[in-house]
Length: 125
Image 1: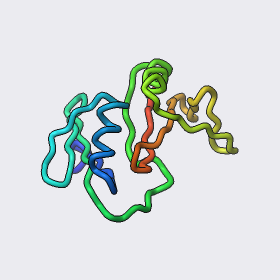
Image 2: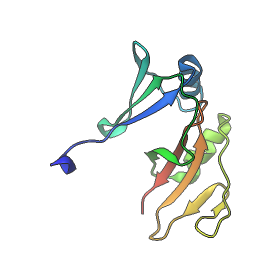
Image 3: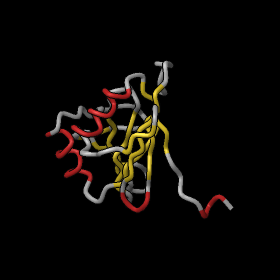
């Protein structure tokens, strides 16, 4: 049943205005504000929310992914806007110029938003 529905991400923020500025300035997104949460509509009917919380602890793993057609161009665009990408060199994952190639050919690059949420750009094979 659930394989028929879209999935939405919800990301926490301790400072909603700071998060709103990050997503506008760095990703070029404009939200619809609904009380203490921001709603972002993206491509293909996808949506994510940023909600205010006093809990400052964040997960140390990817919390949302953004599918892109050209990962090199997307990384370059975001870097030009001041987004800092992560570099990894582990037995499981190594990035080259911020981009890792996964087994199977998918490629990904990770960055952290203003609230400490880890986001990924993903170019599927």
